[in-house]
Length: 165
Image (cartoon, rainbow, N blue to C red):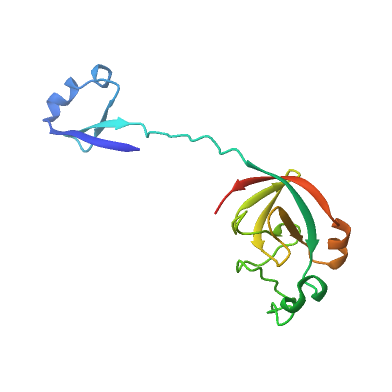
């Protein structure tokens, strides 16, 4: 809230009764500060600017495939991964972000920039990775197991770009 100090009056106590709050304009706020000092401030409400939410951008129909972190899916990139304190592999995409099963996707960064949020069949995904075969209107969805990736198979879907980074 933006406040502007309009006037600081030091008034003898006997004159204080003259300043009845009911006769002051609504935008003046009277605040006693001690027995004989009154602070008059104009109070303005904050200006609220509401921008409409951006509508997702329709990107077209894309071919969807799936992959996991195994050597069949990732080739040479499947080796020498860091591990967490429990001994589990940490899978990092080409964007430098840790991949999350069912959320991270590999994209052509010339079409969908890294970090962008994409909507596929009503669900949000984030562009964290790319791959040699991922060009143009193709997306690869990351899963934690090869079985999940095979089950996903090959699909087509309308793609919407929600946020671009």
